[in-house]
Image 1 (tube, rainbow, N blue to C red):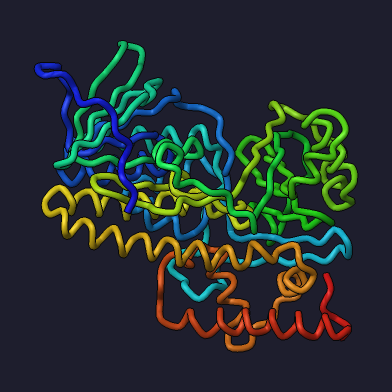
Image 2 (spheres, helix red, strand yellow):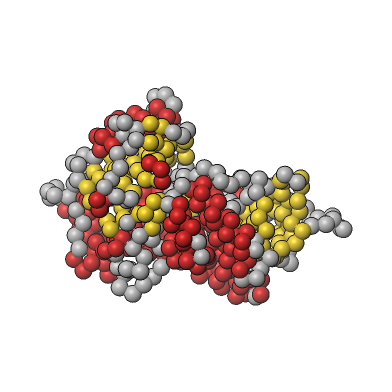
Length: 432
């Protein structure tokens, strides 16, 4: 278990605010944990270096998010600001094949839809909910230093609109997102070299929208060396992003925006939908897309959301992983405050569960550019509900073990390995 970063203790008599739990970061993970802990009667301070609303990528949510929305009592708010999402569509550039996975056909029929949301409004709604539940929220306030006392507790130094603040907390939840406040300082963060991708993206109007059974779906366009996302947002806006390995970005000619438009033009399926599109935002790039911390918790602290790890977003898992890990983190902090031994036991179980879930999803992501995997997505088969098990993964149920899920997913993996073996032997019919 890693040691927390050491800093000089406060001088005798130096005043500091006090709280039960300090949450660093006000995105979906931080806002979720703060709301749950405040509602449980804990004294919570949340510090966010940004001001909300603010732009963020990751607009496509998963059905399993609905259970967390219900627990937070925010489902109606999210419904009001998002686009109804009934499933996910996959299109192969090379063949024109396409398929739609309807969430209503998954193994778990309790949660059969979700939403595509503008993240600025979505994140602000969750942060407002944390305030309403009783968390003390400070925006535009950056944590500069964090010291952990040998006997427990932490002292944070933060800078905000009102100057320097010193906050003494009994427990710290790091929800700092891709800044990875604690993981970076503790040397825990490591890139996932198996998922070494980057993204370039922007918002557009005038993109051809899907209709019929495809309406509201996220579309994943599978191109030669990566994939595009197309996410319909309110008011006719479409989020469009391209994800690929480092070579696509390293070998580009021109700006990041030039790269995005060149890749759009090179994809027949994407270009057809964007022939009349107009860019209405800046074009932004994000590198080092996938990483994970080597430890999730230590004495008096825990990493949640992107502060712990992030996966390639092809299956829209980011917000669900953030909010689910926040539920776990809130439970750990709540238990730890009463009984550190019980908190440690919960933290160990939570880390095992989160790592196992991320590993399951990573298995699929690592293979999404392989012809065999693309063939299985584009021509799904359903013996022993194999396809329905895959849909349940796409709906976010990889985080929650339920009876009957194991056999379909094991069969899916076995089929992949069998088809890969046949492909190496030169058997026809396995390419995408």
